[in-house]
Amino acid sequence: MLKTLQMIPARAAVAALALLALAAASAGSARAVEVQKVVSDSGITAWLVEDHSNPILSVKLAFRGGAALDPEDKPGLANLVSATIDEGAGEMTSQEFQQALSQKAIKLSFGVGSDAFYGSLKTLTEHRDRAFELLELALTEPRFDAEPVQRIKSQIQVSLARQSQDPRSVANRTLDKLMFPDHPYGQPIDGTQASLRRITRQDLHDFVETRFARDRLMVGVVGDITPEQLKPLLDQAFADLPRTTGDVPQVADVQPKGAGETVVVQKNVPQSWVVFGHGGIARDDPDYYAASLVNYILGGGSFASRLFEEVREQRGLAYSVYTYLKPLDHSSVMGGGLGTGNAGVGKALEVVRREWRRMAKNGPTQQELADAKTYMTGSFPLRLSSTSNIASILVAMQQENLGMDYMNERRQLIESVTLDQAKRVAGELLSADELAVVVVGQPKGVEPTREAPQIGDGAS
Image (cartoon, rainbow, N blue to C red):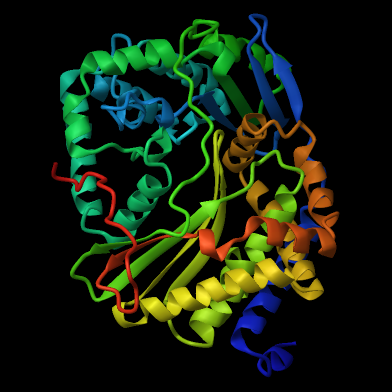
């Protein structure tokens, strides 16, 4: 086999080895995953996968409504809450709370996306009671004391200043603003220097009181626990949350803007970063799996993608090139990016648009579709390698309304995509003329069509 691979192009050899490894992994991980719905005495619902092979318990949770609900003048609020909510709770200061976690080897963390606020808990079985007590304290009695809040703010501000000098970060934030100029999706999740200064301690407390409610809660649990053992722990952590948050602002549905626009942000760097995108496809669209396969073939498959072959391997125009599908609760994006020397930007974009059009016109080949299916079905079992990963998938399944049997049905959903369907979806999804493009650097061969939107430069 190795001798055979040495005689074919590097891209094909890498892809072949990857497909062989994934097929083997898939065959070794083909057992069905049993998901149980657990409802506590007070009505808290969690999805559970039992795994008694190790004395470990992983919990993932999410509240619907993320950074997109931040006040217009205070982007970064949800992110700041996620970074400070475990910095002291109840009677415990920040240091005492962190010590309580470390003494029992409990891992607790929080994060935020555009559409949800996330939590993660991991503990040994013997310490699960204490772990759920500390989780409950963080969710219901966070302190937000001045010292830790200011410390975390300062860390975020340093990060923002660093991002303002990073071409890739500037490009991504500019593209968000270009595509969603008057919508929360255009606001930076981690905020700006100015918005962070406007966020008060009361804002943090108000966030917790108005965003954390049982009707917005999704919980995934994986590990060494039975349904009957889990029920009282769910009540311990979540029963004291309000049943509903009442008047929560609504995020409007929106179509990405900026179609056909090109923006250049001048920055004195030897290599430019380029990002691009247009409208995508909703997660609940019947054609989503076909679109995912098309994306993989076009640029989502890294070494196995058309863009990698045409832009990097054949022409050496980029050191990195990729595409992605990004379904959001209220919009969707089909996008991508590449990094290249300033002199090659115009030519690289020309090749990207050409491949975008070729895929839209002709779709994938039968072999490309078969290889993409092998990868997407074979790689998924690798994501089931830890209790934390499975718990995250359980929450995502709830968030995206996929159903409890999704993990066992996913393979068939992908395998059922036909070549005709993939070609049709490629034609409907991809439009090179509608790509909004942002270039950060000193690019050659690129003519901007408008000025760059203001995103906050990390020092405003």
